[in-house]
Length: 268
Image (cartoon, rainbow, N blue to C red):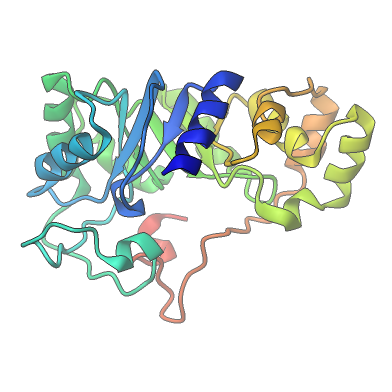
């Protein structure tokens, strides 16, 4: 607890105002930040219950942004104690999918949360063009945000442009792509050119594309670096974008599924 509070305080002092957490990640701790984002694993029967549980854990009266964590509807085991199962936290592929409900139904419950004022904005996560188009057929409120995996090895240009057209802000999770991306020769070259770290180059690339990035760091100096970014030229941005391999960090299991869905179902 003490370390977590220290990390949040150092981020707050550095200028951070956006905190990303999720019900499935365990008990969140939040202290005094102005903007908070939470995420829900969804089933239309349990949206309100899950949301109220998150508010209670956070000791808040509202959240600034509430996201639908994945498009698929999952079965809820252990409902008696209403604890997030380990399979949720670990993102394994053994999740049981409820095929009788759709994210369109769940989104209607999200819209009701928004109307209550307890969720100032609502959005989605891990949605593709395919799933967004299905959602928008019935949505009364266009998602404010689509949070997706995005980094130089997974640039998602088509999805980014689609979201821009619809007025949906893209938030990148795993924004630096881990060591393999940070150690890429092009990233290293640009890092030397601008006299900054590889992470700063990648985050500057996101910023140049109009993407919100949510990097993770518990080190106060790196936290400061992550919001002190160089200005990349159009050529620099194009060089980073050209590194695309359509390569995800989130891996599908032997059964071809990630969190219960196939690539085809996701629309990836």
